[in-house]
Length: 275
Image (tube, rainbow, N blue to C red; front, side):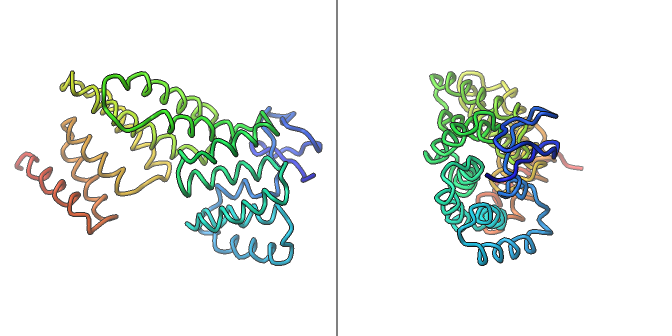
């Protein structure tokens, strides 16, 4: 069995333990690479080379393949990451940490709605019911399944149920999940705003909630042109035109060939009051 160390406080624990005696957090094998999910990007190249060298020397080492899989995922190579983590799970089918990492790689690299995300998270939890990372992953996955982009009034119950899943995930405070939770919560409030505006065009509460979630996602590291564009649209809808222009400018910098964003930026600039 792999040595166990608490991911929250770093305290060592006896083999077979599932909960830290010092802080109460779920325990994870310290050698599988879970901590690498939060590694400094500046160190990533060196970590990747070290992981590749370890796998080359120990191809049947599940932990080594987990470390390599995480490094590949953080390097923007999700398909290769998933392949390595698949091998790790095959080598150690009862390694719940490896199952979680594979589930996370499928979610982050392909889709949070992918059925395998839920299946793998449940397998990890069957081996360690206290693993908050797998619990959080499953809540986000469930929220994505419940939340479908729409806008019909009958979807309000689905929006509420999805929001409950995201809140449950957020309460578990898994650092690597924060940006996704904020982004998906922003999408939910965004869709809720669209749905409610049909009957209450003047209501901006949901738009303001979406703005806060999108901004939090950006602060947590989830920055792409789509989020910045949605931020710009919602800021414009709530009368924050200058802020909207700034977000749309950033969106266009990230996606300079996007004519739709360019046109949206131009039309928003025209609405700015003359100085």
